[in-house]
Each structure stands twice: as C-alpha cells, then as structure tokens.
Image (cartoon, protein in one colour):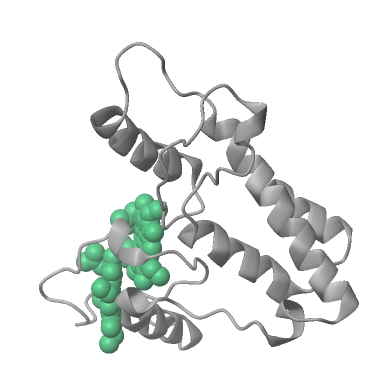
Length: 158
Ligand code: HEC
Ligand code: HEC
C-alpha cells in the first residue's frame, strides 16, 4: 500500500502501479541487499503470489519455521528488509517513467496462465452483468477458490 499511495501522490501512471503490484506478487522476498544492516543474513525467500500481508507472511512462516528456524534465534528481519526492497523498486519504476526509459509506457498487466481462463471469463461476465461477474481483483483465484464441479452453469433467478 505504501508504494501505491506514494505513486498516487506523485501522479504516476496507472500501469506503473499495476507493474509494481505484479512484481510484488511474484517476487521472492526478501533480497540479501540489506544484509549489512542486520545481524541475521540470508533470510529464507518465498513468493506470495498475493499482495496480502497475511498470505505473504504466512507462506514465509510456513517455510521458515519448517526449514530454517533453529528454535533459538528467530529471524524477525523479513518485515524490515521487504519494505526496503519495495521502496527501491518504486524508485526504479518512477525513474523509468519520468525519464521515459521503459516500464511505464510499455507495461501491460495480464493474468498468469494458471488463472487466465478464470479471470477472462469472470471479468467478461461482469461486463455483461451476469451472475459470477467480478468487478475487481487481479489475484490468482485458485489460491482461494476451488473450481466448483457444476461450473459455469448460471443458476438462480432469471
Ligand atoms: C484472497 C482470496 C480470494 C481471491 C484471490 C479471489 N477470491 Fe473470489 N472471493 C473470495 C471471497 C472471500 C469471496 C466471498 C465469499 C464467497 O462467496 O465465497 C469471493 C467471492 C467470489 C465470487 C462470488 C461468489 C458467489 O457467491 O457468487 C466469485 C465469482 C469470485 N469470488 C471469483 C473469483 C475469481 C474469478 C478470482 C480470480 C480472478 C477470485 N475470485 C480471487 C476470495 C478470493
Ligand atoms: C467459461 C467461463 C468460466 C470460467 C473459465 C470460470 N468460471 Fe467461475 N463461474 C462462471 C459462471 C457463469 C459462474 C456463475 C454461476 C452461477 O452462480 O450462476 C461462475 C461461478 C464461480 C464462482 C462462484 C460460484 C460458486 O459455486 O462458488 C467461483 C468462486 C468461481 N466461479 C471461480 C472460478 C475459478 C477459480 C475459475 C478458474 C479456475 C473459474 N471460475 C473459471 C464461469 C466461469
């Protein structure tokens, strides 16, 4: 939310915000770039596939506690390193937009292959104001929804 708020205040183009959003969802946080600032280095990295804190943190905890935690020294540095990664990316995107060297004019958001069908059909349903239409949300659907068996048959009042 921080970077998006910042981009809004500076009048950044909409594609820039979508590019940031997509980058965030797919990025293996945190980098080792800030390790010199912390006693704990090489924090285990995970990809959230989501912009939500709960999902991002819970996936990380799930890997960290099972695979790396020694039961003594808990690594609480992820939430300090991750915002630094985000700020750096935000500045890179803004610079690119303002110097006309990239992302901002060329970037087009698209759903990943694993939920493209869901997204395309459900946004189309919304455009036609049919049941199942979704107005907003660029999430990976399958993290939250199973596809129901009787799928796509419109039920309910005509
Ligand atoms: C972070 C979790 C999450 C993600 C990701 C997500 N949804 Fe949902 N969705 C929900 C919740 C919670 C509800 C409301 C409760 C319910 O109806 O199950 C909902 C409701 C819906 C509904 C209305 C259900 C009804 O009762 O008619 C549709 C359709 C839907 N989502 C489709 C999608 C599609 C398509 C995507 C991907 C582009 C998606 N959702 C991504 C959590 C999510
Ligand atoms: C070809 C079109 C189409 C595709 C592709 C599609 N859906 Fe749907 N979906 C529908 C329609 C139509 C409905 C509404 C049915 C109704 O309630 O009348 C629906 C309903 C839903 C609902 C709410 C109804 C329920 O029973 O829970 C969810 C959630 C959902 N879809 C998720 C998904 C996900 C996740 C995917 C991809 C894995 C997906 N859909 C792919 C057409 C589609």
